[in-house]
Length: 544
Image (cartoon, rainbow, N blue to C red; front, side, top):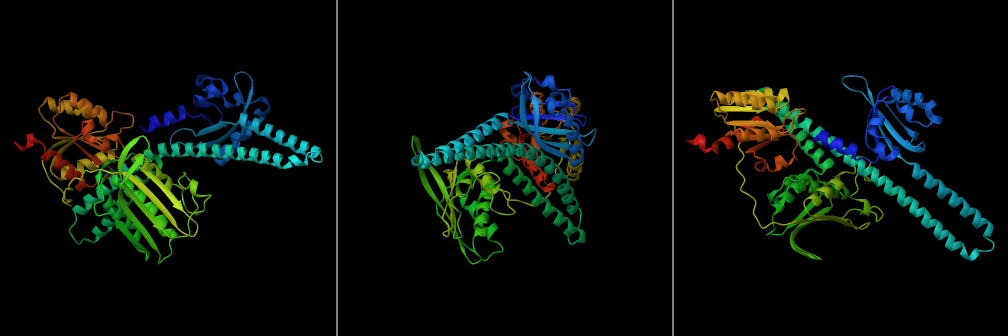
């Protein structure tokens, strides 16, 4: 999934993207070269970038190669020759990439600014002509001075608006790139966390109560839990994290967020929730994170003995041409210094922040999450009178499902389980945990190997009770395709999908994709044993 998204990003980029070696030989180039310069990607691959430079600047190419090797990056302007012989001006920023194996590569990204420079030059010439004309005719046309000044101001405004639009486009591309990168990082991060947390919990279970090392292991487990939360935030920040929706109590989500933020402060939180507040079909974790960010902003804007008001009520939203929609309206009000009017329209923009240490992603993420829930978020503020954030979420008349009691018990059982994961450390951990709680385990590194093991074991009537499949396998058959093949082979084993992509559709609705259960990464041995116990207890064949 990561590779496909990255390929789509490169192939549809309006900018020129390429990879070349330290001699300048092009290894790869994206399709933008076709409509920008007239070449096909095949025309460029294998040729030296120097060949595409305008003759007047080719002598400086060696200086460019030296700079990028010494500094690790280089940026500036370059003139490239189009296939028709015309010259195009490009703004580039290239970075040296040190590979684990093989020689370094240079990753290049450039934007065609020929038209922009031409327009700016024309504007400069027009402005120069305007100033000259104004000086020559000032004595005769004094009555038109105000009109000329107004026209000049409009021209400057248009230039500023154009520059701002270009900046916003660059921000959008940066956020899109961050999303692709973060998805892969979070997946790998969750794999590592599973190994650390799983082995830590396994070690804790083997120690007697009161053992001095057990306290250290508990600290590691707590750190892993915080890291797992950070991983989920990373997905949410970068990709907007597709909501995993369930009917949830909005009142509980609000109370949990308030309790988290009010800790360690003397600020008074006044919470007013309608007694019959409706529920909503939401991702409680994501909406809770939105409220946490807004409440944290309110706390930072409030003096130590101040007040923050949190309200929630049931409303019916009326929009032209649309049926009335029941919603839950949540408002968070602080009485801080307020937000300047010129800043307010940009408050939800990515990377916009007024805090020295801020990332500018908190409110942008909040806007993205609420939008993906079909809701609406807005802000109103006045200098000296505080700020009010308002969220409207589509309501549901359904009630949240009863929560099964959470038990911190390592469930033992019996039976045969097939495990497929491309991470060796995870396979070893799974085999160790499952064997410790009574199961016979076979392991495979990808889907093809898992199917081969399944067919061989089935041929000698050694059936599996459950099969755990990693959703994503680099360079091999992943969990979804493997599950489909196993169903075609007529398996009766319970299929469990495991993934570090918490926002994957399969994780959100496993039964729709043919799975009986899901075990998100990172997991603990107790959580793993509970999932297996649940799916096997529900198997009527095992009850006979």
